[in-house]
Length: 188
Ligand SMILES: Nc1nc2c(c(=O)[nH]1)N(C=O)[C@@H](CNc1ccc(C(=O)N[C@@H](CCC(=O)O)C(=O)O)cc1)CN2
Ligand SMILES: Nc1ncnc2c1ncn2[C@@H]1O[C@H](COP(=O)(O)OP(=O)(O)OP(=O)(O)O)[C@@H](O)[C@H]1O
Image 1: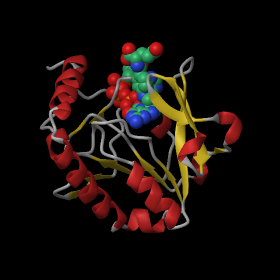
Image 2 (image 1 turned 90 degrees about the horizontal axis):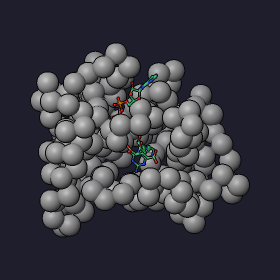
Image 3 (image 1 turned 120 degrees about the vertical axis):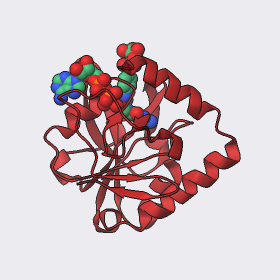
């Protein structure tokens, strides 16, 4: 079986080759498909990460949510426990870089929102199977968070991030829907 570490390297290298124009076009197509889903339309509070290229661009998605009057919450990682809390941001100025080069909410300027109030979690990842299983950066942050989360989950992916199989572990939790620039894959 291919090891997770090896897979992460391959997936990241592959994504980094994507031409800028294709990155932008496909990110737009993915966002357009997302906005048409029932999960998006019904959600008041949405949890999402601040993307770092080559991840699917989440900035336009966050702007659209704000324009639609939705609440956006973003993760703050707690390294000691490998857990996350989600904090409401109303502007990209409420972010700072403290951990792993990722933008996170400035805790003193934002309010924490409990997971029971989150209607939809956009779950990040490097690769996914068509059954919704995913491989991330390897912190286990989302697997831990989702273990007792009851709302909707969607992952956004470029077509090359959908792979035939992944080494699965007992804690892995599949997302309920996968959106690529080419299709929407419902899981169940
Ligand atoms: N844009 C974006 N933000 C995100 C995620 C993501 O996938 N994308 N995450 C998705 O989960 C969380 C961060 N996930 C992480 C997972 C592992 C490591 C990590 O362990 N990195 C180093 C060690 C860093 C350290 O301990 O100093 C490593 O693996 O060596 C960091 C972040 C929350 N924010
Ligand atoms: N629910 C959980 N409870 C305890 N440990 C967990 C849980 N989920 C994951 N872990 C541990 O966290 C580590 C990383 O998990 P894994 O390789 O599945 O990360 P990942 O899904 O790629 O990353 P991420 O969730 O951060 O995107 C593993 O050592 C795993 O055993």
